[in-house]
Structures are given as C-alpha cells and as structure tokens.
Amino acid sequence: MSIRPLPRRPAPLPDELLSSWITRLAVANHCSVPELCGYLGFDGEHPPETMAELLGANIERLCAIARLSTGDLKGMLLARRAGVPVECMSWSDFQHCPTCTREMPGVSLRNWRYAWSLICKSCGSELLPVRASPGNERQVSPRLLTRTVEGSWQLEQAYRCGNRRQSRRVDLTMQVVGTFEFELQHAALFSQDRHHRYAMLAALYLGMSRPMLAAALALRNDPAAETRLRVAFPHQRKLLVRLARRVADLPSRRPRRKK
Ligand SMILES: [Zn+2]
Image (cartoon, rainbow, N blue to C red; front, side, top):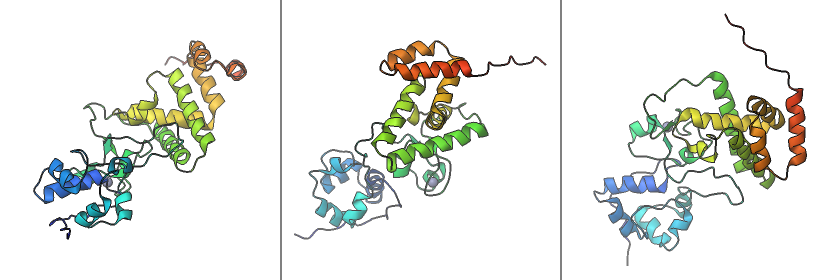
C-alpha cells in the first residue's frame, strides 16, 4: 500500500523539536495535534520528544508521511546523556526566544531546553523564562552576568565532553552551593526567576574554579553553615578541617565606612 505524505509540510527549522514541528504540521493541515499523532502512529495524544517515546512507532511510515529522513528525525529528539548525575535538560519549555517566537509563534528549539543555554543559537537573542513574573526584569549586574556565562560554559563542558569525574564535581559543587544557599538547589538551573537561575550558574562557576575560597567566603558570611556542611558531608571531615583553617586565614571584613 502506498503511503501518502501530508499535503502541507512546512520545513522544520534548524534544531526544532519534533513536538514543535508536529504541532505546526497539525496547524498547516487543519487537524488537531492528537488527530495527527494518531495518524502518524504515536502511542499518546502528545508528540514524542525522545527516542524512548518513539519506540513502538513505525518510523519508516512516519518518515514517509512527513517526508523526513531518519537522521533528521533523530536530530529533532532530545537525548539525555547517560552517566551524568546532574539533570541539565528540561523536559518542558522553561525558556523561549522572544525573536523566534514572534516570527513563528509556538515554535520550540532543542537548544532552549538546556540549563546552560542563555542565548538562542538560531538568532542570538537572549532567552527569557516562559512564565516570567512582571517586576522580575531587574537589571543583571555585569559581574553576575560574567560569572553566569562562565558557569553555563562549565556546565555545558561537563555535560558534553566531561568524564564521570567532571560531572561528579559539578554535582558535588551544586550540593555545596545548596548547603550555603537553600534557594540554590538543582531546580534553580531552570528557575523562572532569571536572577535566581543566573545566581545558581554564577555560584557553580565560583565553586568549580575556586572551590575552597568560594566555600570559605560563604562560610565566613554564614558560620552556621558549618553544621549543615558536617551533616551533608559526614565523610569529608579532613576537607572540612582544611576549610575551617582557610576561613580563619581570611582577612576579616572591614566595616563599611558611613558617609
Ligand atoms: Zn531566536
């Protein structure tokens, strides 16, 4: 039996998610997304985003209907890197590019889903949270921005080409950061509060590049964190002793002069 391709097939954008493209295909062909999903042979009513969700589908038939090569199809799916203890990919849209979505409403690219993505790879615009609350558009200081960019680069490196040791270091650094700042837990990487997310990436940068100094400075500002550290890392006693020495060696803070 011959397979008839869909009558209208808007071309997928570079790096577009399969789910985003299927939604656009449904609009172009005047049908609902669940209807199209059923026609394409998917299990549920939602378009798949990972290879695992595609299991069971007739990929050959799907590619014939959509006029897509299997390579292109794989390039539109999300894949989690095995062996990385830190989740760096969001399984739903948490940020978007205002320029791209203005030109093509509803579009969603894969690179927007990564925790380290700050800039749209397609047009270079700054990515914004999808549910930014009004009044949360405070200016980001140049210093915070520089550290955020460094932190996002380190996170990407650890994820893409880092070995298990490097990934473990990111994980450990994030645990230490969370011990000092309760707000900066792993989920902060995908926070809808831009300052919150940037602070997490900046703390990651400081913790990865100067771990002892960063921890000692944080401990000087919050001496009670020592107890929390001992509870969180009971097997790192020697390291915590070294850290305490480092805190003692720090120059004491000068009180700010009143003008
Ligand atoms: Zn863009």
